[in-house]
Image 1 (tube, rainbow, N blue to C red):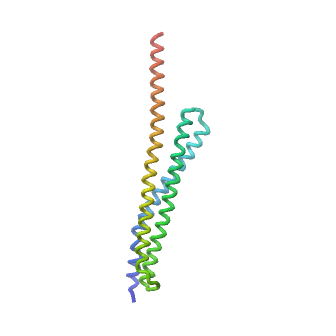
Image 2: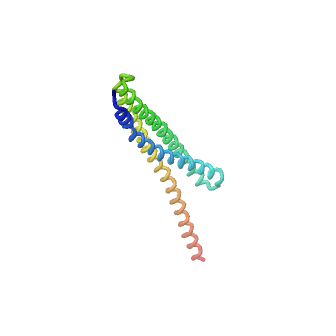
Image 3: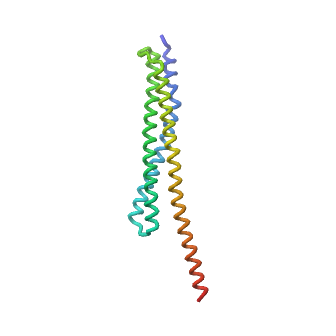
Length: 164
């Protein structure tokens, strides 16, 4: 008979990867919340502002934010799939050890599948980060153009006042 401790020990091996997925999901969930909240804020601002430059800037930003939201959502779903594969790995290790089934390689393949899904989710999140930079660029460009306009207006006003 196989010692129960061996079965439990080997079945809990994927727990390290499961913990990693849980941490990734926690961070990605926060990113999803922030990005979707930002979309709502931009939509609200779009409905209330009359500044045409700001309206144009918001209209350029929203598609990037929506792409980010969908990428984050996809990464979350993929991580849930990875989580399922790793839980299945733990169960399949226990079943193989108990000789209920003869599938010694199933835990290996399910574990590798879970890791591949984690990798895909990480790649999606890396791409999402690059899109985040695009929205930051739009915001900074808008702020700098507004600041330049204010400086030019102040200089023009000073020139007009000194000419009087």
